[in-house]
Image (cartoon, rainbow, N blue to C red; front, side):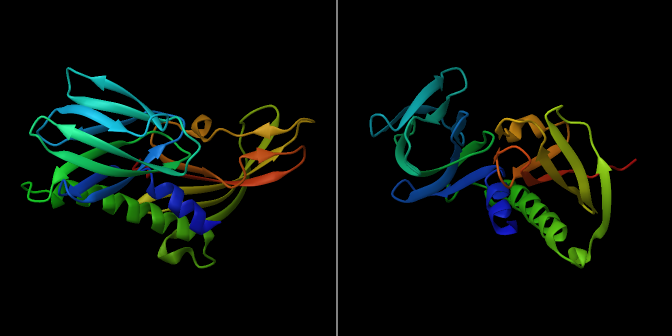
Length: 222
């Protein structure tokens, strides 16, 4: 499950697409929430693509757009035209999870690597924390096993079984459906202040079934 979790977490990093208008730039959009798209130093004039693949709402004051999939496809293409006369082709993969933003930058834009580096460093820290949660040796981080019952919903038992302390805090829980009805788990309900990423191994549980839940958050410096 660690590989699937890492893939899910990587989609939550801020996405900076650097390239040229004649190239295809790839990004990820949320299946259920709008994703903001903007072009560095330019206003977006128009977004177009295959009818029925997506809906788009323009923020004319900011010069940005919000796009949301309306198709069952795993990916679709859009074209973004800016006021400088450039048209950017985007290949957008559709994934479950919270919304994100996409920044399009020209390849020769000044200091383009610096803003992109910070999100990449954060993704690496998240990956390191996830691997520590799954590793028997903790991958060099401070890891402790626990068995702490955490209040969540009356229809569920939520037990903290492992904690990783490092640049980020990682928590692994076991969630059991204690009701007599099927349960659908929405990852967004598990977000709280400071949480960077949440992944649920099995989002649908039958009565008495259990799933692993991973929560990555900012480290406490108290």
